[in-house]
Image (cartoon, rainbow, N blue to C red; front, top):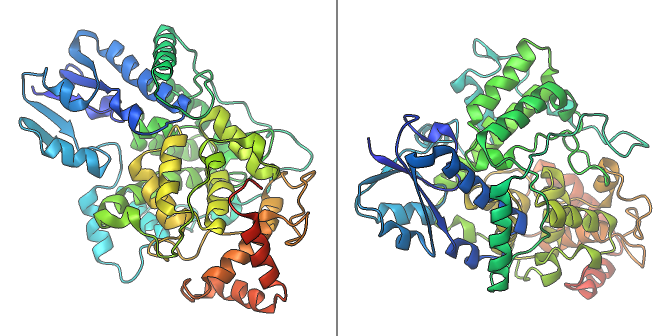
Length: 490
């Protein structure tokens, strides 16, 4: 049986063909020199690698080296490796002698099946259409060819604002891992690396995300039993005092390969069919996995290699240092300051703060999409090239002008006010776009539309906004204000 080389995002048992299969694990220090990763992301990756090595014992060769190539010089036997998750890694392993590259694992819809589906589409690719295909193709939440409940998406039921006058959702908190000697060793090594000049962003802290399949499975089971029912209604809501809400906090576990997504999908469907979990919550969770996650993964490989550099809105401004460095204390806008502080302290925020606070602000200011991909890749514990490239370039920054989404995800302060508790007490007023109280999101929204009205494709979903823009009498003043605001923190 050939020795299986496992990358640091291929750590679950489903990446092996046999529980006794010999394994190679490599810890490359150069990976952490190339980017200023969030300190907690670096900790999580190294902890997961070293925990997997400890689990496998003598079954695994564990090498620590400056580079992968340096480590591979010590290996004197043929290797096989599952298809890596980035183009750069795939090029690297395909160029090595004595290494067999196997098909990808850790996703639900195969690359070939996605390509066949996508080749048969006319026009732009849309997640909703792919999600329906995936549900049918894999037999998930269906009865025959029809969706359980009569509709493919129950998203309208899953857009509730947060409850009034509450600091936290009435839901049990997610189980947190307990650090051990391996975590202590990782923390000591990272402290030493920092003294040697390796740079990180964000704050160190107790490990909050699973580093083993056992921890990830325990969190999944707890979510399905205690949190899933609350997930759906409030999946788009934000509370300044509740960063977790009812989310599963499993994205890093899927992306490290600790959990097989098919297991999570089966568990969620069983929660509906046998335990009576609410269908909108179950459908919303499953859509995130076999819909959005698989859609983004497959688009990464389906789109051309140069897609990561797409910038059709001609966004030319560099991402400022205060944003790169997660300097939340420099920001006065409550929503942006709070989200940046959560990211600084945890290495994670859920999808709406990512999209409608961080990404929305960058889109309004015209920051370079490629730099935002790098920011999300470095700063999030679940950030990898495949997930951030399409999510940021195509969705968050709309840099491909609609190849995979129908409109820019840009919004003013009214959206944030409706879906959060951030605006109460903020120095800015979401209803104002000019003056000292003019909300940077509200002003930025109209400035974005005015700057890009000739670039954004005409479609029904944008017609109302463009008509409103035409009725504004202070557009020039808004543009001038936002130009003067510059790159400084709001």
